[in-house]
Image 1: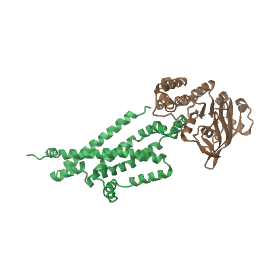
Image 2 (image 1 turned 45 degrees about the vertical axis):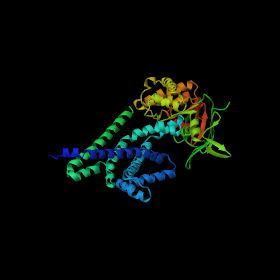
Image 3 (image 1 turned 90 degrees about the vertical axis):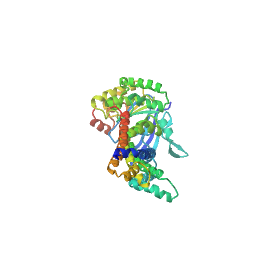
Image 4 (image 1 turned 90 degrees about the horizontal axis):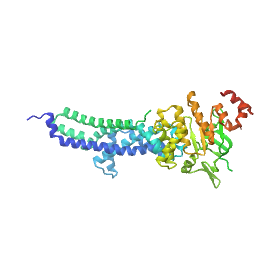
Length: 219
Length: 255
């Protein structure tokens, strides 16, 4: 009987696939939640009243200055000491979403501030209210501006999802390590896991390019 | 009959710097008034106060008897609610030095936005009106082009169509040819002349003296935050009464 890599891969296919599924879930949930939250963070950074702006600025600076791993550990171990008992999956996704929101917030802020003031003035001059100006003039332009950097952040989130293995979430990396500890084929299985992460991120990047092409303005 | 525009003792400060030091001006329906003066004299600021792109600290501006931007309740002057200010801004149309077209919308889309969102027209109705005005500025064939695909002069004509399609009572032109290459200036001035012939009420801040001379029913010369001199264009340009205006005209090109 031959116990080559492909045989071992076949034997381990179920836990690895499950791990892949968990990794994708973590990434997707934290990217979606982080982006929604991040848009509000960005809006607050640009348009909120001063005291709110300072508060939100403090939030993003603090989060961005903290290693993601620390956020993950804090979310799992510290929150439970104040009575918020989250499972490892929930705690991990929360930490990643918060991390993602501070980055997306900065992207949105930068994109909004890069739009010339004349755009707002022209919108005002034809009688648009601020919500209308945002919805039809500023928002669409900011979206195009922020898209490439957002794709980058999304890819970062996929990579950061591996950190949840530390708090025992059975995502792809942890499952891979378990398989390795049984088969001792560390090189092969680490390569394989790396390949899967690459495929996910390549997909995200292609998707970003596609949206960029679709929303490009002819000139 | 009330005047179309009535400005009384307009004061505007940026911090401690007073840029408008008490401007009075009234304008009747159908008048075309050019505002000239050196940079920093307050002419653009005055224009921007009329549609509340700038706040002002003293005085009143009224359009058709409606007080713009502020109200005085129980002796306290306060800014009107934003929704009301947005509504009042639609009384005027403005064309800007930098055109400020929305780059992610076609020429027709630029003109239609205000019609659909502010005037609540149906898209079909708005499209019809947009095409009418784009035709008027000679750009119907470019209606599906994006601003990035148009020349400066074409962009400015679309911007004028966008403003005028909203059917404003008063058009404000803020140095609309200053950012254009010389050979593109004329096509924009021709459009404005056409509007003047239609009886559109217009306030035009400009450095084009020949144009101001030809198109205006009245000229206002701004000097250091005040109106230095105003009157009939022929008299203003040929027989300036004040030393300052004579100085200014000497340094500007009249061709």
